[in-house]
Image (cartoon, rainbow, N blue to C red; front, side, top):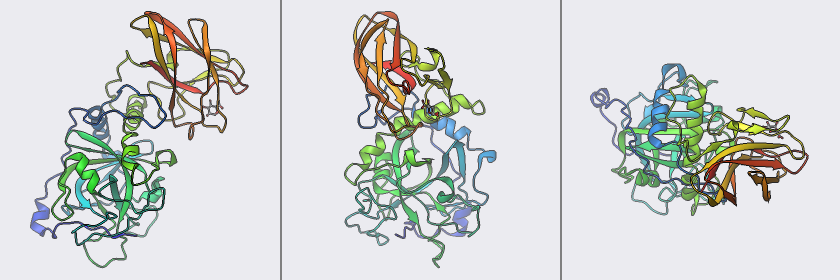
Length: 399
Ligand code: GCU
């Protein structure tokens, strides 16, 4: 267990009173390129960071506040940070950023610790200079359940849990890497109620001064945490940064789908209609349904073909030109057995594609194949070849 501490001298009471109110920067443009999990085909940009940050901020309302007592901004000490549930299983807060140097090989910061609370997949401490990680309180300060503060263990969050961090027009992927010390400490500046600390690497990626002794920023950092096992990032110090960045677009799209489909939140601008063709706009053979009971889909739902040999979904796809295209199919198979399916375009079969299992029904992957398309309207049929039918199909797109 490491002790992480704020890096600035204690701010005088008068200064606390004058502390800058939380002001979240609006992301004006996507500055992080789209990236996809290993093995998946490139997915065109759908929701932008600016759209999603606007949706997150619109959901940071009193009604959605999780904590009943405020957290402390690690950098400024102002006790004015709150955590909001902005979508199902997704929690967000805005604060400053103090710089955590723990786990790195050596650092002049006197607070530097050799260990981090969480480790990489090889059991090594997370290197603050290599892995973009964020910090949460180690325990419930109040020692009551439910905790009046946001306590990660009550929200299906564990080590290496994925989060988006927004700052000044940028967004990055990050993981839960370290904890703010437990409340059995006696010094006032080591407090599990603190929120607003992240690693050197996170600061560097966001353009925030990253020195452990003089770096950080007072406000404008929004951390959006995705709970549940499918959002735990695996990898080593060598590739955790890449792996986390590879999840950014999926996280943006997942939130975008939540905001667009929930009905209670301001809809964000939908993804470009010309690049993605939603399976729910198609036709299912007998027994198939359009469902929305598994998270992470785009559009308004996904196609759940019947569990039968030959059960299919037909999806209308518009091609700009005639020719051979890469057809990418976004699907989910939360079972333990792959679901091969035959792919036809305009009534002609182009072979059977394996649809490998995904981590669960909320995880979406992509398979791709080359098919001929005709300029204008086409119909793509995905027909399962086994008794369990085809996988759940979210959408298809051409590349
Ligand atoms: C589960 C799952 C469905 C899926 C089905 C299947 O019921 O919730 O989304 O389509 O299994 O095995 O096909």
